[in-house]
Length: 179
Image (cartoon, rainbow, N blue to C red; front, top):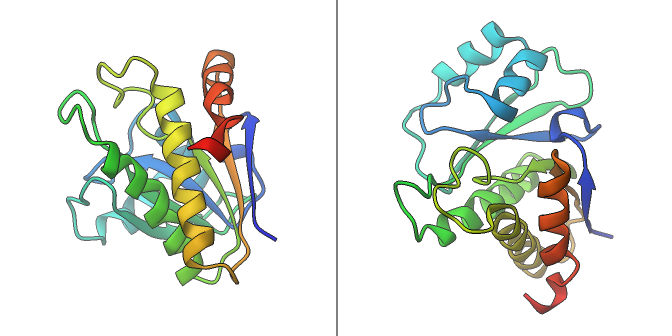
């Protein structure tokens, strides 16, 4: 049976089939969770794998690489969330970053995934409540996925690293059946 759970912690620390990197369109090593994931995987190995993927990756799309030296995951799914400072109404692209990651999980016969709150950090732009918006779009994507693929079980962990992000995301997450 499929499951979606909000947790207070880093997506990079969860034991899952695939950890999601909140990636930039060039798949370059960045700061925040992206930098943590590159460090855990081995920057050189992950950088080489990413350099072999055609870029730029469009907002809302996702690609997969091995997790190399990361001991708690087999794969990294690089989901490109929108930069709301550049595209302030890119809610569909944020939804697609989550949904396309779930489809990529299924397409690779994987069943567990940990997400960061995509586009809630440096890509949040002027969103008034970025963690809430990200949790809302994750919940919507999860609901659509289980409707589209009712016979494919997945375990989804949505991870909020900072206490404020967790509390903000929880506000929406607890009401997700109404989204």
